[in-house]
Image 1 (cartoon, rainbow, N blue to C red):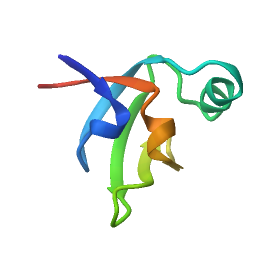
Image 2 (cartoon, rainbow, N blue to C red):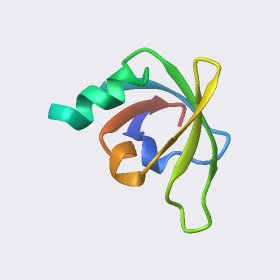
Image 3 (cartoon, rainbow, N blue to C red):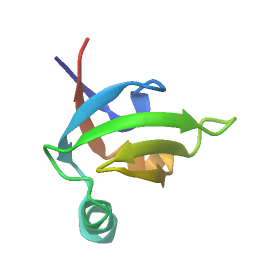
Image 4 (tube, rainbow, N blue to C red):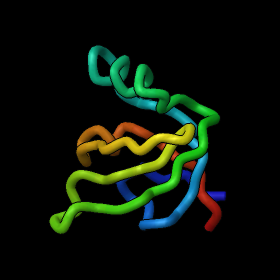
Length: 78
């Protein structure tokens, strides 16, 4: 298993959140959306300029900007 940033995941790739590095308001908001350690995420797609990224978590679709996705560490199969 390899740990990478959520932003670095490929479309249709699945992984498990390991940590959320953000602090303060951004970190709290990310965790409030359900992006917490242990949850499985799948990248659904990206905008034409690769920002934002669309992901699937806990049965719903969520879109994050790249700066938000950068603070989330995900474990993926190599």
